[in-house]
Length: 233
Image (cartoon, rainbow, N blue to C red; front, side, top):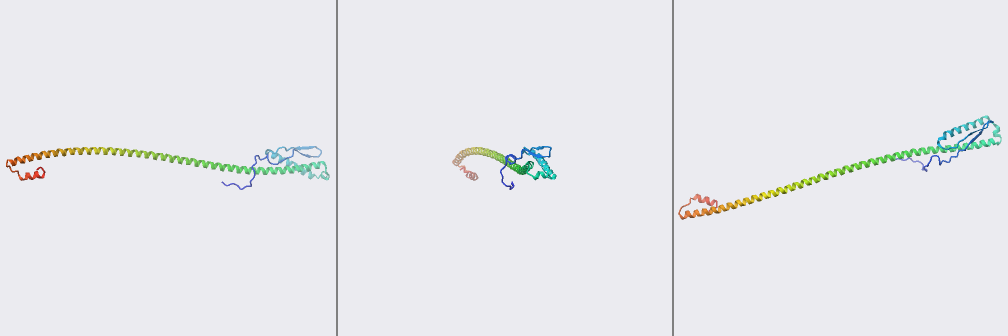
């Protein structure tokens, strides 16, 4: 934010209370033999600036009228009327200087107030921007947190499914091993039965061969070859 390069000065707590303005309590002007007319200016507040300007205008007009009349007796001697008028002119000059000071103070305060308002507006804009950024960051963090929570839940589900599959695989392996064991036992039992049958058959064939030899009965050659091929003799 750009700030104006102005001359540093102390900020006034009031635009009027600290201005060294001291208006006269009254202004008296002699007007012929008709007596005195009095105009009072006893307030220095901004609301009576127009009245003060009107008063100064009237007094200036009256002073011009005196000059146009050419009243030589007024300026020939230092009469009380002349002394009073000179004193009133000095007071008017002082009041005009005070008015110019007050006017400059009003202008400076108005400029300072304008810059203060602009600074407040810029500060509010910065604060609003920071609040919007904070809201966006909070929403972003919330979205990221929700995303991480969802991914964590999905990971837990995947681990649970893998554990279930592993348990199922173990169960299947156990069942397969049991089945294989049963088949092996059955095969072994069948082999034992066949072995016993072969032993009994060999015994029976041997007895038969002995009986045939004892009776001198010759065994056909092809039968002998078949028995040898089957390891029965």
